[in-house]
Length: 340
Image (cartoon, rainbow, N blue to C red; front, side, top):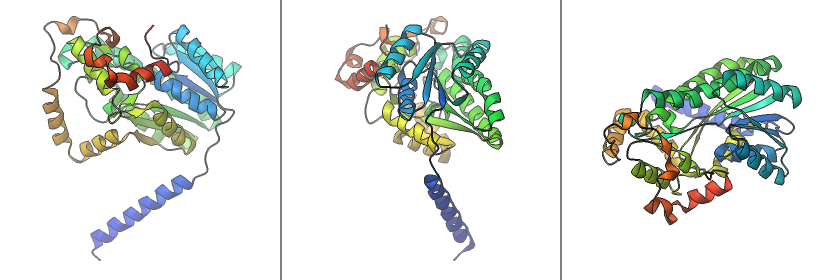
């Protein structure tokens, strides 16, 4: 046997043994602990809160809209889940620190932080202003950073705790018409992986989650620029089709399993796994392919850079309000995503 073949076989066997050991690792109990979920009033955050509550965790939902929070809390209570809703804005560093301090004083130490709060801006890069990029970074990167910095001192001192950072396939591959979102998610993923490497010595786990498109029903809340009707309709379709998207429940169950088994990195959905693998093997070809796809996407109208990003729900029409988006609209009703 050639030496290179032997080395490859040894590496494969070692990887297989590691995977088997990980699967056999004793499941971490979650019952009784406090879980703080940012962006927990709707969408994936709400579904995750329900999954964690079913495992006996005490849930704290954090979001900006108090009415949404109350609807979410009430829905969880009907399922027998102990939940508290606290209004808060993750872009406010001092406010986030105060919120965490209040939770730990009144409910107990935060054992699990789920950074799920987010926004998404859809449109061509030439329609996006520097302020659009700042807005994305404030919520998607600095918002997660603020929450993590608020819980980490206690977790380090107790030498236990878990932080889940929900990023996106847009954190691994630059997707056209999502430039501010891609930029902020790339930053969040890099920070999350580095943080996980550094906190391991304190017994603190950081899980980086890279999901593909999920059927959360949030497409109506996407902020669109450029040719808004076309952007809103296309995004609504893509975020609803079953072969392209993953159900929010499936994604939530996979994330909770990763928490229980102390995984470090999770990719959700076959399309996301295939795209990330292809990009890692032949990045130039994937960028070229995405460039070809971009030729068929809506172009920006003159002066759009100075326009305001508006909710997609205002511009959906035609096929974007048809049977093709039925699954997405059903998800919006289930996950508190329907615009007021």
